[in-house]
Length: 177
Image 1 (spheres, rainbow, N blue to C red):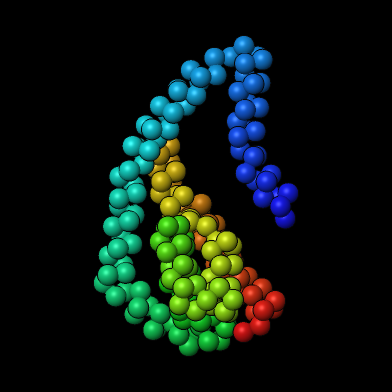
Image 2: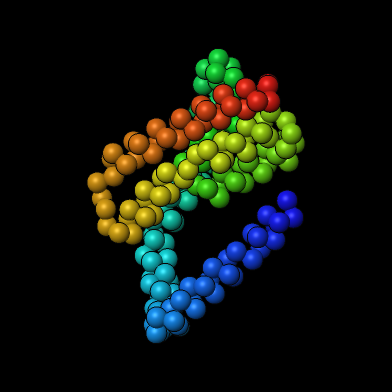
């Protein structure tokens, strides 16, 4: 384990150094290219800002209005059939929308129920098994000007649903309820 920790600490600086040395060997202006990449990254960050603000506003309205609590209450019978605790539903709903919001919900679940509880384990596996589909589609597709997102959104949400179901199944199979 100590080897893996040491490797993970040194891997990024070694990789960056290797790229710079290779660029120097090939007589490429590595610093100028680095600065040009930084400029492109900054302009990309500015261009995605309106999409981010819109998405975060929608998330805040959904939670503050009580719509999330009403939805959880409505689907509670279905949740007991599939073995999903209602406490984890906000995480499953938030994860496709916002990675940071989902991380906050997962941290809260682990803080309340503990990392070794069924809910803590399920939240952890669910966080790693799903993606921020709406974030990816909104921000990245918006940044490059793709407006026809229907199929990508459907496939992304289907993958998230599969990730949620598989999380429940795997955590129940390995750790029990």
